[in-house]
Figure (tube, rainbow, N blue to C red):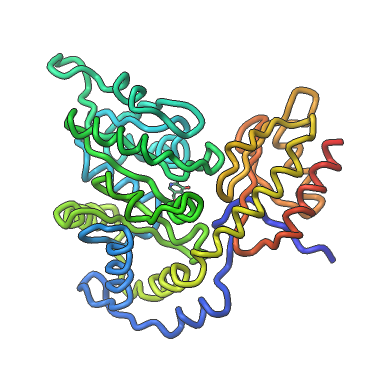
Length: 344
Ligand SMILES: *Cc1c(COP(=O)(O)O)cnc(C)c1O
């Protein structure tokens, strides 16, 4: 029997036996009383690793993003994001519903320049314009194919934001991947921002959870909004133990996922039925487009599923594949060969 090769997302991983053991052994308490020692430790470890004063557990990356918007903006404000940001495309309108803000997309393929930001900031002093109060960076960028945001541009963007009175937020659900791929420590990637979100449920292989880090006053405000949104938890140490285990044991190996994605992309790229820009394949995500005459994304994804390969249709002719802890290198190449056969 063929086992499924699941390249839909790095969220499909199941806890390893060692991670389950760490979860089972976790010391726990009521986190709403600040009495869950494992959650407290995870927050301290992450604050330090991200070079920030404080950090706060979040049940999901989506909630981390919603809370960050509520802390850093007021209803009616405008937020500048990269094109096709998670905040705008994968949170079902949450930015508008929960924070009351409108999003303006700039740049292309997941990145933008300081000039793009300068052009997007609405002039101050005219009462008809919404105030632009926040700029958001996504690193790595999911729909952009896992691209790493160039750090010198991040620095220029955040420097301009400061002079214009904008706050800066980093959606770093896959910041671990950005760090491994760029060789820059997470603290360096996080330094220019007011708040930083990271996820444990993606490449690190934990069953769930994210975290917000930043200055203490902002984290205190985040705590209130997390509670308001229903995200304050109790014996959360089981999850926190999985996150600590993932950080300790699965971060360095992200380089393997990146190599697997690269090998997959290089095998597919020459196929005339698809368009795949190898320059975007920098981490564990491969996004490719089906050319005219090739089947559309839904058809190809269904055909691949019948052959035991799971992928995501990301648009009418756009497909995403993601490598992770639960797929081996030879399976990834096998999946590429299956696609080549289907597209031949
Ligand atoms: C997955 C993801 C999130 C949201 O995380 P969930 O835990 O699935 O809610 C936020 N931002 C980016 C860039 C992501 O890829």
